[in-house]
Length: 411
Image (cartoon, rainbow, N blue to C red):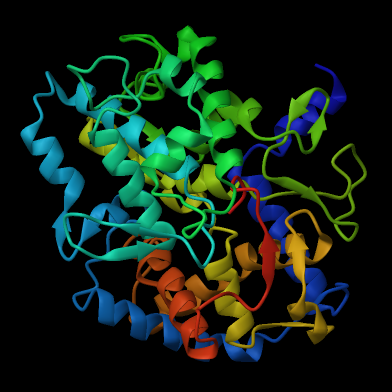
Protein backbone atom coordinates (compact mmCIF):
# COMPACT_ATOMS: atom_id res chain seq x y z
CA UNK A 1 0.00 0.00 0.00
CA UNK A 2 1.17 3.52 -0.78
CA UNK A 3 2.62 5.01 2.47
CA UNK A 4 0.40 8.08 2.11
CA UNK A 5 -2.67 5.88 1.68
CA UNK A 6 -1.75 3.92 4.80
CA UNK A 7 -1.25 7.19 6.66
CA UNK A 8 -4.67 8.38 5.51
CA UNK A 9 -6.39 5.23 6.77
CA UNK A 10 -4.71 5.74 10.16
CA UNK A 11 -6.75 8.93 10.56
CA UNK A 12 -10.10 7.22 9.91
CA UNK A 13 -10.76 5.98 13.43
CA UNK A 14 -11.98 7.08 16.84
CA UNK A 15 -8.57 6.23 18.28
CA UNK A 16 -6.94 8.76 15.96
CA UNK A 17 -9.42 11.43 17.01
CA UNK A 18 -8.81 10.76 20.71
CA UNK A 19 -5.03 10.50 20.45
CA UNK A 20 -4.59 13.76 18.58
CA UNK A 21 -7.09 15.54 20.79
CA UNK A 22 -5.11 14.53 23.87
CA UNK A 23 -1.94 15.81 22.21
CA UNK A 24 -3.65 19.14 21.54
CA UNK A 25 -4.76 19.37 25.18
CA UNK A 26 -1.23 18.60 26.37
CA UNK A 27 0.00 21.55 24.32
CA UNK A 28 -2.76 23.69 25.80
CA UNK A 29 -1.79 22.76 29.33
CA UNK A 30 1.76 23.86 28.49
CA UNK A 31 0.31 27.15 27.20
CA UNK A 32 1.67 26.47 23.73
CA UNK A 33 -1.46 26.91 21.62
CA UNK A 34 -2.00 30.01 19.48
CA UNK A 35 -5.71 30.62 20.13
CA UNK A 36 -6.82 29.22 23.48
CA UNK A 37 -5.66 28.94 27.06
CA UNK A 38 -6.86 26.09 29.26
CA UNK A 39 -7.88 26.46 32.91
CA UNK A 40 -8.54 23.06 34.48
CA UNK A 41 -9.38 24.69 37.83
CA UNK A 42 -12.85 25.29 36.37
CA UNK A 43 -13.47 21.61 35.59
CA UNK A 44 -15.00 20.77 38.98
CA UNK A 45 -17.63 23.50 38.70
CA UNK A 46 -18.28 22.48 35.10
CA UNK A 47 -18.81 18.88 36.21
CA UNK A 48 -21.27 20.07 38.88
CA UNK A 49 -23.17 21.98 36.22
CA UNK A 50 -23.36 18.88 34.02
CA UNK A 51 -24.48 16.72 36.96
CA UNK A 52 -27.22 19.22 37.87
CA UNK A 53 -28.56 19.25 34.33
CA UNK A 54 -28.35 15.46 34.15
CA UNK A 55 -30.31 15.01 37.38
CA UNK A 56 -32.91 17.46 36.11
CA UNK A 57 -33.30 15.59 32.83
CA UNK A 58 -32.92 12.06 34.22
CA UNK A 59 -33.60 12.08 37.99
CA UNK A 60 -33.08 8.31 38.32
CA UNK A 61 -29.83 8.51 36.30
CA UNK A 62 -31.33 5.96 33.94
CA UNK A 63 -29.84 7.78 30.96
CA UNK A 64 -30.19 6.62 27.34
CA UNK A 65 -27.38 6.94 24.83
CA UNK A 66 -26.79 10.26 23.15
CA UNK A 67 -28.23 9.68 19.69
CA UNK A 68 -30.59 11.00 17.04
CA UNK A 69 -33.40 8.88 18.50
CA UNK A 70 -33.74 11.25 21.48
CA UNK A 71 -34.74 14.05 19.10
CA UNK A 72 -37.73 12.08 17.83
CA UNK A 73 -39.31 12.31 21.29
CA UNK A 74 -41.53 15.38 21.74
CA UNK A 75 -43.32 16.09 25.01
CA UNK A 76 -42.72 12.50 26.07
CA UNK A 77 -44.16 11.11 22.83
CA UNK A 78 -41.74 8.89 20.90
CA UNK A 79 -42.75 9.67 17.34
CA UNK A 80 -40.72 6.95 15.65
CA UNK A 81 -41.77 4.26 18.12
CA UNK A 82 -45.39 5.00 17.27
CA UNK A 83 -44.63 4.83 13.54
CA UNK A 84 -42.71 1.57 13.92
CA UNK A 85 -45.49 0.02 16.00
CA UNK A 86 -48.01 0.70 13.26
CA UNK A 87 -45.71 -0.56 10.51
CA UNK A 88 -45.55 -4.16 9.31
CA UNK A 89 -41.86 -5.07 9.20
CA UNK A 90 -41.44 -8.70 8.20
CA UNK A 91 -38.59 -9.29 10.67
CA UNK A 92 -36.16 -7.42 12.98
CA UNK A 93 -33.67 -6.96 10.14
CA UNK A 94 -36.29 -5.19 8.01
CA UNK A 95 -37.00 -2.80 10.86
CA UNK A 96 -33.28 -2.26 11.38
CA UNK A 97 -32.85 -1.33 7.71
CA UNK A 98 -35.62 1.25 8.02
CA UNK A 99 -34.06 2.63 11.20
CA UNK A 100 -30.66 2.85 9.53
CA UNK A 101 -32.31 4.66 6.60
CA UNK A 102 -33.84 7.22 8.92
CA UNK A 103 -30.82 7.66 11.19
CA UNK A 104 -28.38 8.14 8.31
CA UNK A 105 -30.54 10.68 6.51
CA UNK A 106 -31.45 12.55 9.67
CA UNK A 107 -27.89 12.77 10.98
CA UNK A 108 -26.51 13.91 7.64
CA UNK A 109 -29.09 16.71 7.68
CA UNK A 110 -28.17 17.68 11.24
CA UNK A 111 -25.43 20.27 10.82
CA UNK A 112 -26.22 23.56 12.56
CA UNK A 113 -29.46 25.12 11.36
CA UNK A 114 -28.67 28.67 12.42
CA UNK A 115 -30.60 30.82 14.91
CA UNK A 116 -33.47 31.87 12.61
CA UNK A 117 -34.79 28.60 11.21
CA UNK A 118 -37.80 26.94 12.87
CA UNK A 119 -39.95 23.94 12.03
CA UNK A 120 -43.70 24.24 12.60
CA UNK A 121 -44.54 20.84 14.07
CA UNK A 122 -48.15 20.08 13.21
CA UNK A 123 -48.63 17.39 15.86
CA UNK A 124 -47.52 19.41 18.89
CA UNK A 125 -48.31 22.84 17.48
CA UNK A 126 -44.85 23.99 18.49
CA UNK A 127 -42.28 25.91 16.49
CA UNK A 128 -39.03 24.01 17.02
CA UNK A 129 -35.55 25.06 15.96
CA UNK A 130 -32.03 23.73 15.79
CA UNK A 131 -31.26 20.00 16.05
CA UNK A 132 -34.67 18.96 17.36
CA UNK A 133 -36.45 20.81 14.57
CA UNK A 134 -34.16 19.28 11.96
CA UNK A 135 -34.90 15.84 13.40
CA UNK A 136 -38.67 16.28 13.18
CA UNK A 137 -38.46 17.69 9.65
CA UNK A 138 -36.43 14.68 8.48
CA UNK A 139 -38.74 12.27 10.31
CA UNK A 140 -41.82 13.78 8.70
CA UNK A 141 -40.27 13.56 5.23
CA UNK A 142 -39.31 9.94 5.90
CA UNK A 143 -42.77 9.09 7.20
CA UNK A 144 -44.40 10.61 4.10
CA UNK A 145 -42.19 8.51 1.82
CA UNK A 146 -40.27 11.50 0.46
CA UNK A 147 -37.14 9.38 0.09
CA UNK A 148 -38.83 6.17 -1.11
CA UNK A 149 -39.13 4.97 -4.71
CA UNK A 150 -42.20 2.89 -3.81
CA UNK A 151 -45.33 4.69 -2.61
CA UNK A 152 -46.53 1.43 -1.05
CA UNK A 153 -43.42 1.37 1.16
CA UNK A 154 -42.93 4.89 2.51
CA UNK A 155 -40.60 3.93 5.38
CA UNK A 156 -37.48 3.49 3.31
CA UNK A 157 -34.80 5.54 1.60
CA UNK A 158 -33.81 4.55 -1.92
CA UNK A 159 -30.49 5.47 -3.50
CA UNK A 160 -32.09 6.60 -6.76
CA UNK A 161 -34.35 9.09 -4.98
CA UNK A 162 -31.46 10.52 -3.00
CA UNK A 163 -29.29 10.85 -6.08
CA UNK A 164 -31.83 13.23 -7.64
CA UNK A 165 -32.93 15.14 -4.53
CA UNK A 166 -33.09 18.87 -5.18
CA UNK A 167 -32.55 21.73 -2.79
CA UNK A 168 -36.13 22.83 -3.55
CA UNK A 169 -37.51 19.48 -2.41
CA UNK A 170 -35.52 19.71 0.78
CA UNK A 171 -36.61 23.30 1.29
CA UNK A 172 -40.24 22.27 1.00
CA UNK A 173 -39.84 19.48 3.52
CA UNK A 174 -37.98 21.71 5.93
CA UNK A 175 -40.36 24.67 5.50
CA UNK A 176 -37.55 26.92 4.29
CA UNK A 177 -38.55 30.38 3.06
CA UNK A 178 -36.87 33.75 2.80
CA UNK A 179 -38.28 34.48 6.26
CA UNK A 180 -37.27 31.05 7.59
CA UNK A 181 -33.75 30.48 6.22
CA UNK A 182 -31.82 27.28 6.85
CA UNK A 183 -28.03 27.52 6.82
CA UNK A 184 -26.37 25.34 4.20
CA UNK A 185 -29.51 24.16 2.39
CA UNK A 186 -27.70 23.59 -0.91
CA UNK A 187 -24.83 21.84 0.87
CA UNK A 188 -27.22 19.46 2.63
CA UNK A 189 -29.02 18.54 -0.58
CA UNK A 190 -25.72 18.02 -2.40
CA UNK A 191 -24.49 15.77 0.41
CA UNK A 192 -27.57 13.55 0.11
CA UNK A 193 -27.21 13.38 -3.67
CA UNK A 194 -23.62 12.22 -3.30
CA UNK A 195 -24.79 9.67 -0.73
CA UNK A 196 -27.40 8.31 -3.14
CA UNK A 197 -24.90 8.01 -5.97
CA UNK A 198 -22.32 6.25 -3.80
CA UNK A 199 -24.88 3.77 -2.45
CA UNK A 200 -26.12 2.92 -5.94
CA UNK A 201 -22.53 2.23 -7.00
CA UNK A 202 -21.79 -0.02 -3.99
CA UNK A 203 -24.33 -2.88 -4.09
CA UNK A 204 -21.96 -5.23 -2.25
CA UNK A 205 -22.29 -3.02 0.83
CA UNK A 206 -25.73 -1.42 0.49
CA UNK A 207 -27.83 -3.92 -1.46
CA UNK A 208 -27.08 -7.33 0.03
CA UNK A 209 -30.69 -8.19 0.89
CA UNK A 210 -32.73 -5.38 -0.67
CA UNK A 211 -32.50 -2.59 -3.21
CA UNK A 212 -29.68 -0.10 -2.79
CA UNK A 213 -30.44 1.95 0.31
CA UNK A 214 -28.57 3.42 3.29
CA UNK A 215 -30.24 0.79 5.46
CA UNK A 216 -28.33 -1.87 3.57
CA UNK A 217 -25.42 -0.92 5.80
CA UNK A 218 -27.14 -2.90 8.57
CA UNK A 219 -26.63 -6.13 6.64
CA UNK A 220 -23.02 -5.19 5.95
CA UNK A 221 -22.29 -4.55 9.64
CA UNK A 222 -24.20 -7.64 10.73
CA UNK A 223 -22.01 -9.75 8.46
CA UNK A 224 -18.78 -8.59 10.09
CA UNK A 225 -16.95 -10.76 12.60
CA UNK A 226 -19.31 -13.41 14.01
CA UNK A 227 -22.52 -11.69 12.98
CA UNK A 228 -23.49 -11.32 16.64
CA UNK A 229 -21.27 -8.56 18.01
CA UNK A 230 -19.59 -5.40 16.79
CA UNK A 231 -17.40 -2.87 18.59
CA UNK A 232 -18.63 0.72 18.41
CA UNK A 233 -15.30 2.00 16.99
CA UNK A 234 -15.69 -0.52 14.17
CA UNK A 235 -19.06 1.02 13.31
CA UNK A 236 -17.31 4.36 12.91
CA UNK A 237 -14.48 2.86 10.87
CA UNK A 238 -16.96 1.29 8.45
CA UNK A 239 -18.85 4.58 8.13
CA UNK A 240 -15.65 6.48 7.40
CA UNK A 241 -14.40 3.94 4.87
CA UNK A 242 -17.70 3.31 3.08
CA UNK A 243 -19.19 6.82 3.16
CA UNK A 244 -16.04 8.95 3.17
CA UNK A 245 -16.26 9.97 -0.50
CA UNK A 246 -19.59 11.79 -0.02
CA UNK A 247 -18.13 14.61 2.03
CA UNK A 248 -17.25 17.89 0.31
CA UNK A 249 -13.76 18.03 -1.16
CA UNK A 250 -11.59 19.20 1.70
CA UNK A 251 -8.42 17.31 2.51
CA UNK A 252 -7.27 14.04 0.99
CA UNK A 253 -4.14 12.00 1.45
CA UNK A 254 -2.90 9.22 -0.80
CA UNK A 255 -6.11 9.53 -2.79
CA UNK A 256 -8.25 8.97 0.33
CA UNK A 257 -10.74 11.70 1.31
CA UNK A 258 -10.31 12.53 5.01
CA UNK A 259 -13.76 13.97 5.70
CA UNK A 260 -13.99 15.96 8.95
CA UNK A 261 -10.21 16.33 9.20
CA UNK A 262 -8.36 19.63 9.26
CA UNK A 263 -4.97 21.27 9.53
CA UNK A 264 -3.38 22.71 12.65
CA UNK A 265 0.32 23.59 12.63
CA UNK A 266 0.78 22.67 16.30
CA UNK A 267 0.07 18.95 15.73
CA UNK A 268 3.40 17.76 14.39
CA UNK A 269 4.24 14.20 13.32
CA UNK A 270 7.10 12.65 11.40
CA UNK A 271 4.90 11.13 8.69
CA UNK A 272 2.46 12.25 6.02
CA UNK A 273 -0.19 13.06 8.65
CA UNK A 274 1.86 16.00 9.95
CA UNK A 275 -0.46 18.83 10.98
CA UNK A 276 -3.66 16.83 10.35
CA UNK A 277 -6.40 16.66 12.98
CA UNK A 278 -9.31 14.22 12.51
CA UNK A 279 -12.61 14.92 14.30
CA UNK A 280 -15.32 13.03 12.37
CA UNK A 281 -18.16 14.66 14.31
CA UNK A 282 -21.17 13.81 12.14
CA UNK A 283 -19.88 10.29 11.51
CA UNK A 284 -19.46 9.69 15.24
CA UNK A 285 -22.91 11.15 15.89
CA UNK A 286 -24.19 8.65 13.36
CA UNK A 287 -22.21 5.79 14.92
CA UNK A 288 -23.84 6.56 18.28
CA UNK A 289 -27.22 6.67 16.54
CA UNK A 290 -26.78 3.25 14.93
CA UNK A 291 -26.13 1.45 18.22
CA UNK A 292 -29.79 1.08 19.20
CA UNK A 293 -30.98 -0.17 15.76
CA UNK A 294 -28.17 -2.73 15.83
CA UNK A 295 -29.19 -3.85 19.30
CA UNK A 296 -32.85 -4.15 18.29
CA UNK A 297 -31.67 -6.09 15.23
CA UNK A 298 -30.02 -8.68 17.46
CA UNK A 299 -26.44 -7.41 17.35
CA UNK A 300 -24.49 -6.80 20.59
CA UNK A 301 -22.48 -3.56 20.50
CA UNK A 302 -19.32 -3.49 22.62
CA UNK A 303 -16.70 -0.86 23.55
CA UNK A 304 -19.12 2.04 23.31
CA UNK A 305 -16.61 4.22 25.17
CA UNK A 306 -14.22 3.60 22.30
CA UNK A 307 -16.01 6.42 20.48
CA UNK A 308 -15.11 9.97 21.51
CA UNK A 309 -17.03 13.01 22.56
CA UNK A 310 -18.48 15.12 19.77
CA UNK A 311 -16.56 18.15 18.53
CA UNK A 312 -19.51 20.47 18.10
CA UNK A 313 -20.53 23.87 19.36
CA UNK A 314 -22.71 22.86 22.34
CA UNK A 315 -20.03 20.70 23.95
CA UNK A 316 -17.35 23.17 22.94
CA UNK A 317 -19.44 26.11 24.05
CA UNK A 318 -19.83 24.56 27.50
CA UNK A 319 -16.07 24.71 28.09
CA UNK A 320 -15.77 28.27 26.77
CA UNK A 321 -18.73 29.63 28.72
CA UNK A 322 -17.72 27.77 31.89
CA UNK A 323 -14.21 29.23 31.76
CA UNK A 324 -12.25 26.06 31.06
CA UNK A 325 -11.25 27.47 27.68
CA UNK A 326 -10.76 31.12 26.89
CA UNK A 327 -9.61 32.97 23.84
CA UNK A 328 -6.17 34.54 23.92
CA UNK A 329 -7.65 37.36 21.88
CA UNK A 330 -11.21 37.99 23.13
CA UNK A 331 -11.93 40.19 20.13
CA UNK A 332 -12.05 37.02 18.00
CA UNK A 333 -15.51 36.39 19.43
CA UNK A 334 -16.78 39.29 17.33
CA UNK A 335 -15.97 37.57 14.03
CA UNK A 336 -17.32 34.57 12.13
CA UNK A 337 -14.68 31.91 11.64
CA UNK A 338 -14.39 29.37 8.85
CA UNK A 339 -14.69 25.74 9.98
CA UNK A 340 -11.18 25.10 8.68
CA UNK A 341 -9.56 27.97 10.58
CA UNK A 342 -6.96 27.01 13.17
CA UNK A 343 -9.02 28.71 15.87
CA UNK A 344 -12.06 26.49 15.20
CA UNK A 345 -9.97 23.34 14.71
CA UNK A 346 -8.18 24.02 18.00
CA UNK A 347 -11.48 24.64 19.83
CA UNK A 348 -13.11 21.49 18.50
CA UNK A 349 -10.07 19.31 19.20
CA UNK A 350 -9.70 20.57 22.76
CA UNK A 351 -13.39 19.86 23.26
CA UNK A 352 -12.90 16.16 22.51
CA UNK A 353 -10.05 15.81 25.02
CA UNK A 354 -11.80 17.85 27.71
CA UNK A 355 -14.93 15.70 27.42
CA UNK A 356 -12.84 12.68 28.44
CA UNK A 357 -11.54 14.56 31.48
CA UNK A 358 -14.96 15.83 32.38
CA UNK A 359 -16.42 12.33 32.10
CA UNK A 360 -13.91 11.03 34.63
CA UNK A 361 -14.85 13.78 37.08
CA UNK A 362 -18.59 13.26 36.64
CA UNK A 363 -18.27 9.50 37.19
CA UNK A 364 -16.22 10.00 40.34
CA UNK A 365 -18.75 12.37 41.85
CA UNK A 366 -21.64 10.04 41.03
CA UNK A 367 -19.77 6.92 42.22
CA UNK A 368 -20.17 5.34 38.81
CA UNK A 369 -17.75 3.92 36.24
CA UNK A 370 -17.40 3.75 32.48
CA UNK A 371 -19.62 0.67 32.31
CA UNK A 372 -22.52 2.17 34.24
CA UNK A 373 -22.01 5.68 32.86
CA UNK A 374 -20.32 5.54 29.45
CA UNK A 375 -19.45 8.73 27.64
CA UNK A 376 -22.52 8.29 25.41
CA UNK A 377 -24.72 8.79 28.49
CA UNK A 378 -22.71 11.71 29.82
CA UNK A 379 -23.12 13.45 26.48
CA UNK A 380 -26.86 12.87 26.64
CA UNK A 381 -27.33 13.68 30.30
CA UNK A 382 -25.27 15.86 30.08
CA UNK A 383 -22.77 18.01 28.40
CA UNK A 384 -24.83 18.89 25.32
CA UNK A 385 -27.79 20.12 27.38
CA UNK A 386 -25.49 21.96 29.79
CA UNK A 387 -23.80 23.67 26.85
CA UNK A 388 -27.13 24.88 25.56
CA UNK A 389 -28.28 26.00 29.03
CA UNK A 390 -25.17 28.03 29.82
CA UNK A 391 -25.28 29.65 26.38
CA UNK A 392 -28.82 30.84 27.12
CA UNK A 393 -27.65 32.19 30.46
CA UNK A 394 -24.84 34.12 28.83
CA UNK A 395 -26.60 35.28 25.65
CA UNK A 396 -30.28 35.86 25.07
CA UNK A 397 -30.37 34.01 21.74
CA UNK A 398 -28.35 31.06 23.07
CA UNK A 399 -25.80 31.23 20.29
CA UNK A 400 -22.23 30.09 21.00
CA UNK A 401 -19.64 32.71 21.89
CA UNK A 402 -17.58 31.58 18.90
CA UNK A 403 -19.37 31.92 15.59
CA UNK A 404 -18.53 29.35 12.90
CA UNK A 405 -19.42 29.74 9.23
CA UNK A 406 -21.11 26.49 8.17
CA UNK A 407 -21.93 24.96 4.80
CA UNK A 408 -24.41 22.56 6.40
CA UNK A 409 -22.05 19.57 6.36
CA UNK A 410 -19.73 20.05 9.34
CA UNK A 411 -21.45 20.46 12.73
